[in-house]
Amino acid sequence: MTYVVAVRAMCEFTAKRGDLDLRFTPAPTSLEGMAGHLAVAGRRASGYQTEITLTGTHRGLTVRGRADGFYPLANRLEEIKTCRGDLTRMPDNHRTLHWAQARVYGHLLCRARGLAMLTVALVYFDIGTQKETLLEEFHTARDLEIFFVEQCERFLDWAVQEEAHRAARNAALGALQFPHGQFRSGQRELAVSVYRAARDGKPLMAQAPTGIGKTLATIFPLLKACAEDQIERIFFLTAKTPGRALALDAIDTLHRSAAASGSSGSALPLRTLELVARDKACEHPDKACNGESCPLALGFYDRLDAARSAALAGPKLDRAAVREVALAHEVCPYYLAQELARWGRRGGRRLQLLLRQQRDAVRAHADQSVARRRAGGRGAQSARPGAAHVQRVARSGGVAAGTQNRAGHVAQAAGAPATRVERAQACADRNVSGLR
Image (cartoon, rainbow, N blue to C red; front, side, top):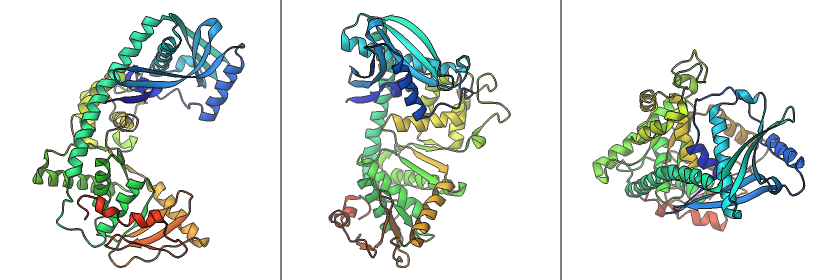
């Protein structure tokens, strides 16, 4: 098995140490960062090289990225970081991450160019004062290689474990059957539409009557798509807290169904993570999020690895389970959940169900749809009683609408002729195990 990871992503997983500390904010924007990099490069002498593409491998892990700058005359590799404010206030976890990136790039550069030694530098550029602060380390190529291997080994330990989980999860989801004997009226049409959207990588906006089982009709086909590696994870956003509970209940129903049928062994290897607002998860609301104030922020990154491993040992990470693990390892429950969610995204193959309030996003979609109809855009046909009313939102921002019947055929709205691809989608339901 081979893995590919960016230098920054690997270092963010392996190299952060020290306290959780949110005081050194706000960070410069992306545009400010690019402008800062250009300003630093413009101050360098002739021969200064920028954006150097580098790649290295270790035991099937490919690490790649672009070093910010290299000055051959000084034999110095530079990692440029834009910042704002007093550098002495920068948290240790930021500084250790920056040095880790610079050292990994240093190793990759030594390997690529046959260098025996190298000066590795951090260049902090204050976007407000336009002032540079230069920090340097001198390393042999051997020192940098040892550091690189250590980071790769730590990342591989996690990656191999996650790949094994993904394989077991996909096999179990492939055999997973719909937990009820039959679909309710309109439920199957919605499920097939959701599966198609996941398969084709297209957005889908759906409106359906109360009581058809929308939650399960959404989650089940997405899990089937995960089994086929069409998607890697599910984000389930709810407007209100009761909706979050419904989603968790749907997952519990699938676990019970799988256990009863024996289709996936003793337990369904599906990880579910519940995210809640920070004010609801905070154990010390009277304290600030830094190690000098909050005991759960003190040494957060030093204990994160153990907490993360303990959390992933269980399939269901609802609010109570995350809190229990976090307090056992003396880390913040809210930020432990954020790290678990983040590495499902960055590391690639872990499935998560992220349940979170998102009222504004739901309203924004609804407002946009209403505005387009008022402006004379294409409107949706009325769904027959009990059927799912499906609106497919085009990537261009327009709306093509239609309704689906039980055969999976799409009745196009006026002004939206069916394309060859859309006609082919009518047969998609035969690819959905359990939806036939």
